[in-house]
Image 1: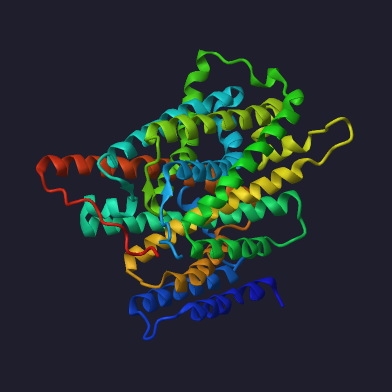
Image 2 (image 1 turned 135 degrees about the horizontal axis):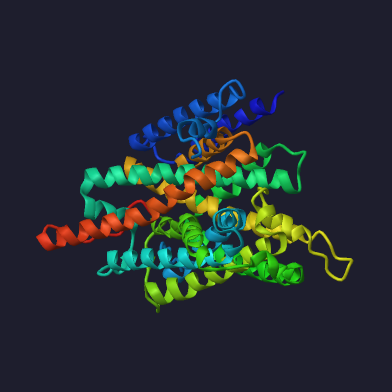
Length: 69
Length: 378
């Protein structure tokens, strides 16, 4: 199993830990939507990271955008 | 008997938090930046940074002049209004999240490039986020109490290491300093001020209460002068023992200087306590930026259950840190050439904007009343 796949296990772990903390019923809708937004952002960044080295890192993108004088 | 939980920290504790924050970055970048711009005159650069630091403290003092508790997010909303305030907080939140990811990645790379070359950086990133997640749930008041001990241990180790390096310092590496050094020193100082003015992040954590001293006695005289001494010592240790030419080609020159210490011809490898100290200060650094980012996220979304969001926010920072870079030298570029100037601009610009708008609105008589205690704290 590649290390990248192993680290992706952090996402279900984070979901599990979040659900264990959810004490209010019904769910606070703002917390729920913020959680969904965070999860989507995490999944997007994680997917981007798994595409290394085919895709450039964020720093390489910034270096291309702001080259050294 | 159950007492009400204290949800504030004092100005003194805020200053101590900033000392840990600063030392974590300064050990990594201060010798690199100062030596790159000021060469042998590098030890003078912190004097310029200190002046900019005092300016920021004066701005914060004017901003909170009529307040009993200092809360920057609430103050920004009060002064800028809901829309512009939310926009400013969004910018600050994104910046703090990126900073947390950057410091997390820097910490993992410094461990893999110094003592654990065969271990993957992702392991250290993951292991650091576990205690950071726990301390975010506990609150900034717990972190600041932990930091009271951490900062003392950091300063003691730094002092002992400095004594060990003294006999390796060659004064030729710190000379000549002439009038021609003034401009390079000023440039190095302005660049380095990026870590000095990062003080504003501490004011995002929770309400800060005034203790016996005010802003200048507590932050300028105690915190600022201590940091000035510490940063001069760090630069003299590094540039004095290695020379600026060598420092300019190293990614972690401080560790390289420490590795040369040999006490009584037998005690070597004293970099271990330095790495330990560094991990502690990195922990405080990452925790403070993550807490500030998390607090702003809750403020923006008005989410009621902050604890639920902590693991998800930690997971986001984990993958952001991993996606930031693939090579250590890229990280130096990112830190020095991009993040440091932005940090300096935001650290001065944000309080300056608030003070200016506050003065204008007060003169016009349409400044809303000061904010109530925040509701997003337990």
